[in-house]
Image 1 (cartoon, rainbow, N blue to C red):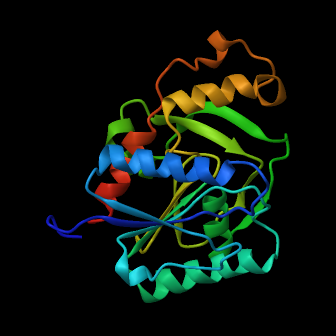
Image 2: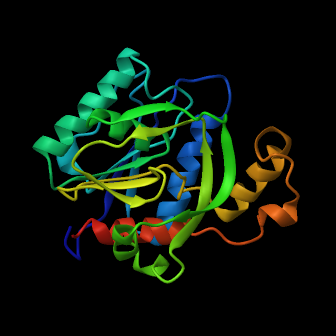
Length: 238
């Protein structure tokens, strides 16, 4: 992507309709977060579940796989379609980069030979400091000194065995980049704002965070999702 091009991003909304506003919330999170760091960029949304529509990867700088409410290990036809699209895009359109988020992180890992599972301790809703590996400290210079990035976690599945040819940028299978440097994934949600993260934590307190107090959860400490997405935009030119 050169300096005069308009950044073009396609987001796959990877979740079946369930009668809630989940899909629209996902869209709004991505729209707002990318608008904050790339105000002149264009963000398009695609439905691989019902409409079975996928972007022409050659027309975009970045393909994003969103989170979702379905087991990334399942064999639903639309899920297998997403996995196939990811593999083909990475192989045939290597200049277009792929970003997997939450469910997308798990799906990408599975697409390239990794294994996913349900989180053994149950669903996770948390604002966490994700510890970086040495490779991660180099990849995320803003977090090198602290050795971690702070971000929202909201998931019931996780990567159990990482895919071959991927580099772990964070501990506990939380973040990967492939050796070809055109696929990057986060288990966490960099697109979720600090305000929404705090709201989710308070709403889900009894269910997921073991009834810790607000003080213990440190939910007033800012998250670093926009810094992560800013790094993603830099990565597009690498």
